[in-house]
Length: 207
Image (cartoon, rainbow, N blue to C red; front, side):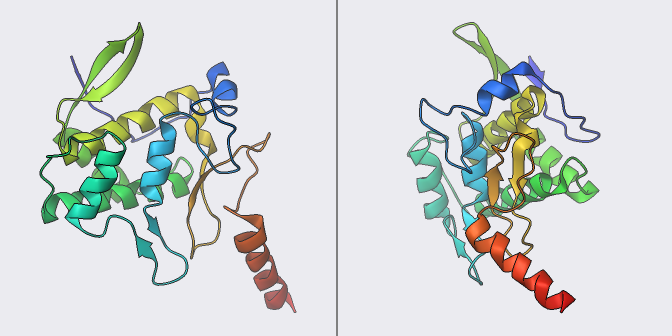
């Protein structure tokens, strides 16, 4: 059974599971930014490019670095081929996911198109693991790994967990974080750095 992930006209679905997801990840105590369960894979993938300090640092800047990152997380086999075009596709999906998070439910058409293209490249199938249904890619290469990440996004959207995924409100940062605040009021990835810097910037502008 094939099932493609679609993002257009997404409407958040709330669930009692979202309250449970907000409190635990792999049995560990969550940090202020750690996402629950597999959603942490999406968050860390987006953050493989850290915009600050400029010009930024990319953890998957080469095909070899991308393979190592994916292998370490069990998303591809150790001998999976990763070339320059695959790297370019991965980077495009990464930045589309960052834009999707920052869009807060209203992504630009080009972002939707990029994600749809990635989802179509490696379709997902429904698998039952211990009686629990989950979306898994039909491919074990880079495209399959990207589809796996999109499947996680799909699941998070339907549990309500995606509503707590945020991009830092500093346009020069955009670090992806999971908002653990009770009323989902988080704006900054780190109040001590980005939050205070932007507050100081506003004060200077008002002076």
